[in-house]
Length: 257
Image (cartoon, one colour):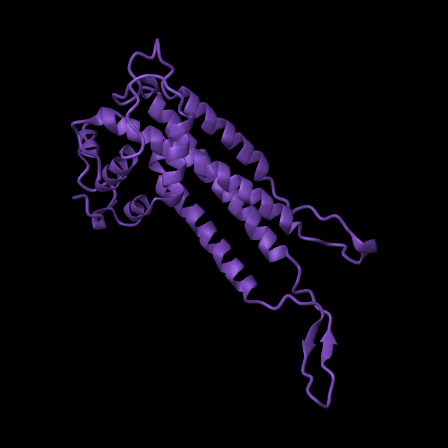
């Protein structure tokens, strides 16, 4: 709510004839919150595992007069990490899922926005190809989000008869994250274009501050161009820009000059 405070765009829709928005808009807090819960659970498990004893065998006691006692254990098993890595991959994929749907809505020509977020779309394709890119990356993420931890292939002559496949889960989760970040960057890029068309109405504090940061690096698109550089710039902002991160945490705390 603090991000949308003082939004003239929001106020302009108070008396519109639309009964309610699609889920990708109306349920964003619930979906994003569930993803955040998954991330917090992931971090808690990783922190616990980093501080745990995973040696095998584990040596107890032992001093100058006695040898330590060696006890075989199973703390090395990667199941705790494998499960939360798969969980995180699924959660991140759903974050991209709802993001791509919002991008699609921005391009659909509703609520006064131009079709494909560009004028003269009979000549220009607008932001159709960035949305294609988001859809393709989302498809890849969905495939990669298939859990690895549900599989177990015995090794070591059956001694290791149940394994976590945690390394596979970690590699897949990393690949999912890469694709999800790009999908989010495309939504941010399209959102900035949409805000341009809302002028002179001003968006809420959060979108306004984020829009200003984006426009310092990516210009408004009047006609078709190669959007690859724009997507890479948006991705770099999403990953590393400290001002954009500050806006996300507290829009009113950022000095806009």
